Image 1 (tube, rainbow, N blue to C red):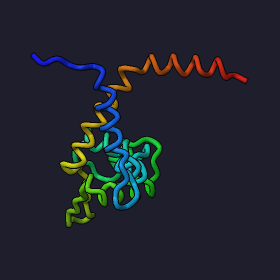
Image 2 (image 1 turned 180 degrees about the horizontal axis):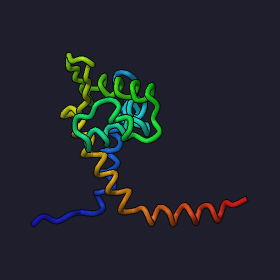
Image 3 (image 1 turned 180 degrees about the vertical axis):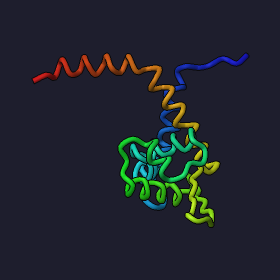
Image 4 (image 1 turned 90 degrees about the vertical axis):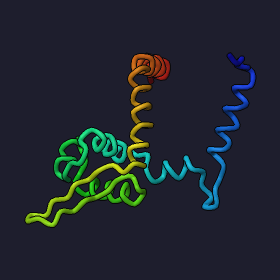
Length: 140
């Protein structure tokens, strides 16, 4: 069995972070680019709901994503499709039927989001306690 040298872990973490934050040819690090194009509440909720529902139609997806307008859902789905995270399947029927589905890339993002969701659920009480403590210290 190998020995873990804990003193080197912060160095390795810093190296990994530096690599992630490294600017690319477009002047953006991958995280910045991701945040600009994807990390908003609607995109994340759409991805989660597509992961849950499978291949929903537009109105089914709209009813699942509480508070989203028709226009915002359209914009969000187009953006996710542009990024290769969602596919749009049009069936030539009367009336036309359109279904949306996560691509393999979208499913890989869903896995990451599920991990984030599990982390949030695990630390929910701790976060609530910290918020309460902060608010009590900063009450006007």
